[in-house]
Image (cartoon, rainbow, N blue to C red):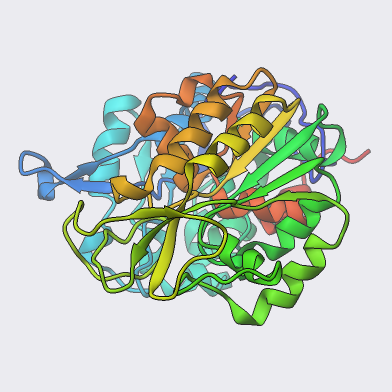
Length: 410
C-alpha cells in the first residue's frame, strides 16, 4: 500500500487522538475550502514549458489528489496553497509556482493554487494578519501538507483557529502509519538511517533506539559514530561536537550496525556533491578513482558511501525485518560512483516481506528513480516531519487541527 492510497476512517496512533478528518467537516457543497498542500517539488529545465521549467517529480502532487478530488466531488470550491523552495519573504521568480500550477491542472482540473506562501514574510513569522488574508472568504480548511506540519507557520497553525478544519487523507494516513511504528510495530523492527548531519538526527535516533531491535547507521553521519567507536576516518565529514552523544547511543544497549567498509575518494579529487550533503569540489561525474577501505579511512581520503559488505549487511537485516523504516541516503547518490549503497538498501526495502516505511525526501526520490516506489508499504511525503513525529509523537500542525472547533473530543 503506497502513500497515495486514500484511507477513510479515523487514524490511530501517536498524535492522532482528536484529529478531525474530512468527514468531520460541515457539508462543503457550495463552500470554499482552503487546502494547505506540500507542493515543494523539484523542478527541471524544459525549453518547451511556460517559463522554461516543469515539475521533475510529481509524487507530492499526486499524494494530495485523493483529498482534492473528495472535496471537488462533494461540491466544494477548492483553493490550494503551498510553499516552494526558500525565498526570503519576497517574490522570487526562481520559486514561482507556475510550473506546479500547470502540472496540477493536468492531473486534476478545477483546483486553484495561490502563489508561493513564502513570498510573504508573514508565513514563516506566523503573522496573524497574513492568516487573516489566507482565510478571508474561506469556509473550511484542510491540512494536506504533512511535510510542512512540523513548522508552526501561518498556513499550518493559523487557519484551524478560525475555520472548521480537517486532516487530508494523506496526512491522516501518515499519522496512522508513523504512529503505528511508535506503538506496535511488527518485530523485528529495523531502522536504516542515513544522511549527512548527525546533529539533525540524534533526537530521532535516540527515540528509535528505544523502540527498534536493530538500528543501521549510514551516510556521512556514520563517520561521527565511527569516531565514537575509536576508528580513524581520515578527512570524512565528522561532527566533533556530537561524538560523545553518539558514544552514549552506542552504549545504550540497542544493536547498532555501523559500516564495516567504506567507498572513499582521495581528498581534493572532484565529485558531484549530492543529497548526502557533503560539500565537495564541483567536478565531472566519473573523475577520480574511488577505492573500498575498511572502517578506518586513511589520511588524505574521505568516505562518500557505505561499502559493498556494509550494504549487503544492511540488506540482510532489512530482509529479516517484520517492520523496516528507512530515512536518508547512504552515500553521495548524485555521483553514480557513490550511489551503490543507497541502491542496495532501496532494493532490499522494496523486496522486504515485512511492512516497509520510507521516510520521505531523498529516500523516496531514490525509490522513484529505481522504479521501486510501488513495492514499498508506505511512502511518506515528509522527511523532516516524519522524523519529528517519530521523535516527539506530535507536530504543531496536528496540534492545531485538534484545536479546531469541529475536532472530535473523546
